Image (cartoon, rainbow, N blue to C red):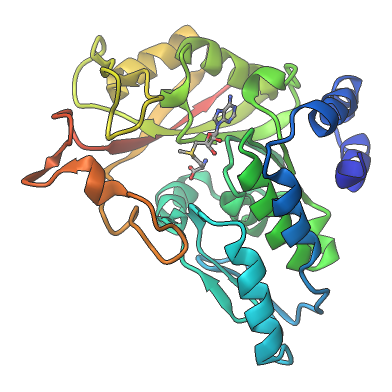
Length: 323
Ligand SMILES: C[S@@+](CC[C@H](N)C(=O)[O-])C[C@H]1O[C@@H](n2cnc3c(N)ncnc32)[C@H](O)[C@@H]1O
């Protein structure tokens, strides 16, 4: 449990202290029964990262921590350890001379979302399905008091711990990532803002998922939902075949009209579509830090308006609603 000791202290001191009724037992179970076969290696790389004084920190588009005193040899060592945590999908990060050019320019997504979210000062904020936690740092930049991420992807958890390792302690103490899925969360009913970006279409029961997100928010709290959509009316939903853009775990892609309808059925109020855009091959692409296939391989090579299966190419919407 040592891994999450400080995070649990932060929970105890926050308005989410009732989470402690289930969280410590879940984390112990995770550490004894659910560890990925490669976790020990990933975590060993994190633990070998050198202790370095952060002299400059930026939580802007490239989340970065630097110190000009760090030697070339140390930079090489850090690069080698961070490469052990490949593939890096969500970023970019710059850590003591090492630029991690991730598969996704997650800063592009934040640029579409942030102007509509505004100031998060003093807020308890959660990001459900936060990946490596790139956006958690951006939420801190926007003023959040405490930022809580959950994601069941264990490589993402290791990447998050590597980034947080280099952060100044006063910032690190306000940003948390627990290796949980949405079904592990009780209805906390205290969050000011809950983000869930890129997760809804992976859920087999999207309505249950929206209700779970509702249950996390305090009355009047805000949901910021980002997901794949198709063009169409209130009754249009694409349920792909075995794959969508070569992804096997895509279940429901509604139109924005359908999504607004679902949100209303789940008791959200004032739901508004604040952005809708096509995903470009500049936003999701193969890099030196993610050497596998990426968006260009998932689209029809002769017509980028379609996926390789012939479905509409990825189009994403951002919707904000009130609980
Ligand atoms: C497409 S990624 C989106 C990551 C990030 N939110 C973003 O927008 O860049 C989907 C994420 O959902 C996570 N995920 C999968 N199942 C989940 C679940 N049951 N609860 C929460 N997150 C889940 C995955 O591990 C993955 O990190």
